[in-house]
Image (cartoon, rainbow, N blue to C red; front, side, top):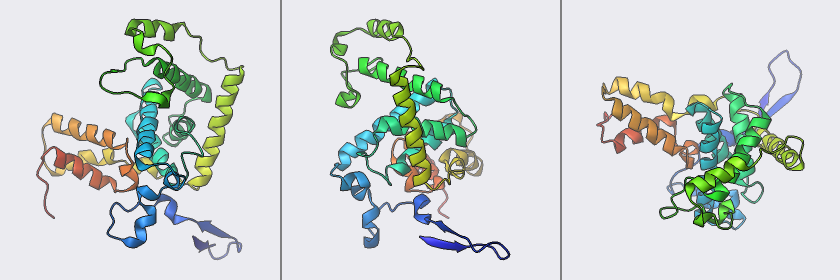
Length: 271
């Protein structure tokens, strides 16, 4: 914690700022003093959650954010902002404190405000309720390739239903009533977690949109004189995929972009 004195001529009040909230986390074991900040020492790990389980929950949460961003028609930057908030929060709090569903919904609400793409609380709640119903029925899932498993409370008999039957069931369910107890519970939880996010991250979130790796792709394209649109699109896709894990809290955006071009075997200057 660092105390920042007030300017001359102002009152004697002082502002206390925790600069570690938005700092980059270490990504290697080279520094012994940084061990406590590594993934194995996250708040969830201290609560007895294994790294593999925590990773699955993070992937699960970011997949919720992606589905919600698509349904709410958010631009890619808003999705990236929501993921950054999501990952930073779980480096400050434990999964046992707040589940990924409530955290994802609150991150969607906060990210929309930061990016000046706000959505009403009602639209966000109805969107997540719709996602929950679809995931319980495993709509669109290739059950032979992957499975969300127990994390989504799969509905009994969902495996035996055909895709068109699942879609018909989804359409037949009435939207959550804004006057009902379920809606009120969702609303209270989302607002509570929104307050937790703001308090935990110090109400300082305005810098996040400028720290996305997507913003640097065009600069790399120009400097490297790349004319292929496919390379640019592939680099963009890599940056989108990086939002699913916590690279955004471990590396600067320029590093993430350069890695995406290295994956594409684009030669980069040595200096």
